[in-house]
Length: 297
Image (cartoon, rainbow, N blue to C red):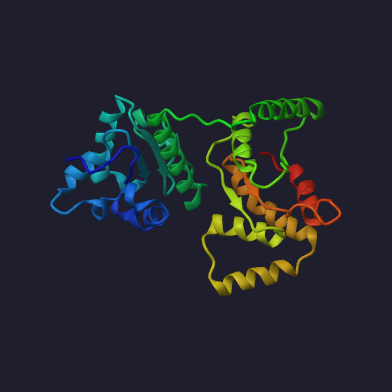
């Protein structure tokens, strides 16, 4: 009996790269992720488990490094190549240790490929995005913004018009309105429609109500570099709070450059976190907008 259900994630890697792959595995849904011995059921052979993991409507993730030559990964790649003929699943390639899409087997070069700039969080989001897309395709589900279709169309047109008027790319979109009205879903659909040349799978940061600059900074910092200990958090907060608005804005911009480099939009959700009590943009945010004018994407 096949133990791997449609939409499962299969992580293929060389033993030498296990330390890095473990970090990705820990952030995924274990119940739907096939990760070598950990996911093999009692009495099920390793080869049989690999065959199941790379067959059917699944997500095949290849961690491609110099270590993948002459390993089990070569066997797994051949299985994926066979399954690719039916195009029933999705493939994501994650280059490591200096590898790029150029050093992939010829048949894999057309698949979605990360770059070495991707953090663990970026890779996890990309895998989860493919999983959602595959499940939606299998179920016949399509993304819609119920009751907001016309607003989405108008926002898209206004964005195009503003680009034509200014001759510059749009870098910041502020969506405001009542809580619980679907702003986050609208923002995600708006980003896909109006910034279609950017890569999907960018981060969504859910910040506390009345978020301050330090909340923006810590959310981005931990996403790029990993979770901080309690002591590290306290040190980061103290150092950040000691800065003026301009330096705080620059610190946040330096982090935001990460997603500019991999061409992904950033979505931030916060209640009453962008303006002061007089409805003016908070000083640090106004400075952040000004500084970011020189940073593409």
